[in-house]
Image (cartoon, rainbow, N blue to C red; front, side, top):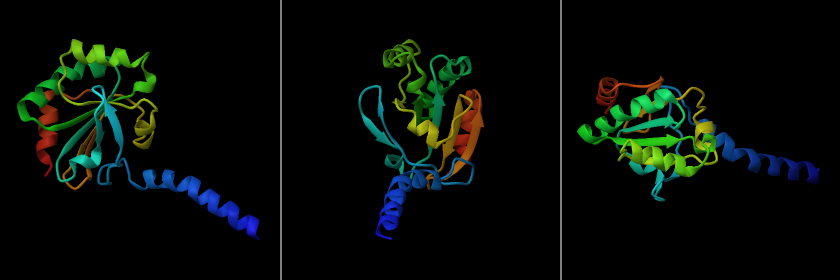
Length: 163
């Protein structure tokens, strides 16, 4: 009987963190899962750092043509409206971290680029097609989710719909 209790406690403690991540959703109307990642500059950022603010989260890679195509529009969006953008690079799919840095420099990107080096955040958000973009409102609720490259106009329209 003690052994069974021991096994139950161990099982619960192993799966509780996983269940906590997936308790938050990745669909419109659900609370966005919190995460913490380093930027290419080494700064630690968490989604929860932006509590009370609107946030655009974009999942992308350097080798994805639609991702590359939308980056100039995202940079323009960032410069014009100064929104909170978290561009999460699926670094575990890249050849190396330096490739991400070169890409950022080549396209002169100035918004925060986060490195998902272990793929944990992309798993939590269940990222399959890339790019995938989420618009998170000031309450931490997902208000928009899209697959594929967004235009500047689409970014502005979806961001402005949120409070």
